Length: 239
Image (cartoon, rainbow, N blue to C red; front, side, top):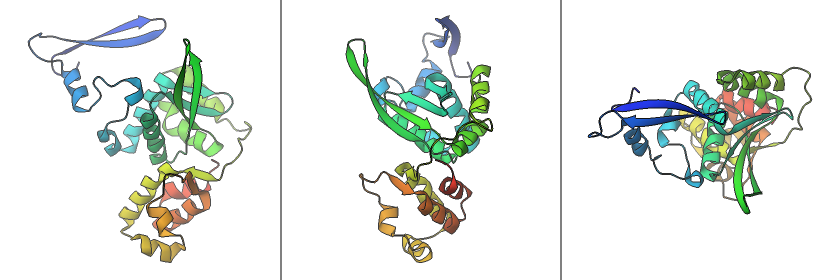
């Protein structure tokens, strides 16, 4: 209700809470609706959902809170040791994967088609696995869940002695934006990076659409070159 001309009500239906807003004065627009329109969120269907550009300028602490709220809506935690976020929007899945990488958490996107009400529906699942990634997910995101049950389950998933998931050696190509951001902050050109690391600048600066990701040793070497703790951790973590 901090939005101009906005009154909010909370409704409970089938164990699900909904927030509804209305105008206090009918002659003036609803402030929260105007805000959603400015961000490009108003009237967008499930398949076209995305995160507004403004989200990517937030500090890491705010990103963690946003991810926690997203996970509480459409996310799950499994005793099979993974945290997953399910969406009908491919772009939203990529946005969530990018924010996780910003926090040093590697996630993969899987496409799933399943029957639903006499038709086939496709969804995109952002999945976090591996001890190091789940530990960071719990430390940064899950601890901010509003649900005590989900917070407790996240603690169980990262408890010492739980069986390890198999390690994979490729970090998703979405990490390119983090690599380039680290390069810019270090004030280095791609040619200078090649001289220091021996890595091909062509594959690093403009990965083609067929590229699935970067080898962990490549990311680790870039982390050392840029003195980036995030890249160094991703390069040495259990993915």
